[in-house]
Image: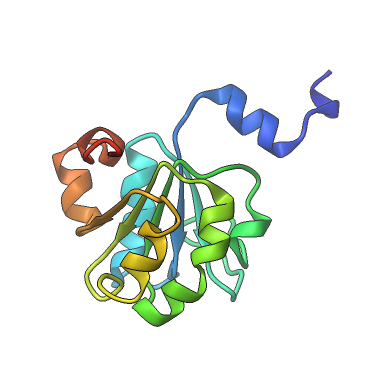
Length: 143
């Protein structure tokens, strides 16, 4: 019965790709806000992540990765690299297929902290990737 299912089981059964947008913003002028909208337009289940917990473009926001209702296929980051490096353990525990480090969130120490945990990292602009297609299909396969 559906009432017995957890949020994770429901998301997994839908087959839609999922994305966590770390550093999501409710400000329409911010790139993180645009990423939420464009992932949703591409058919992703979008989970904005920000300590404020305010909804973003109509999507409920989560305070951290541990609160997400399922495993994100993609994590895209809009926080500075030091904050990102501090999230490396939580990101590894979330087991995403891909982490996108946007300009300003890319570089060290976050890139090597994630790669050291076996996470596929792409240092690129999410909005450009989405304009070219599905980031999961565009990213290089893991080595």
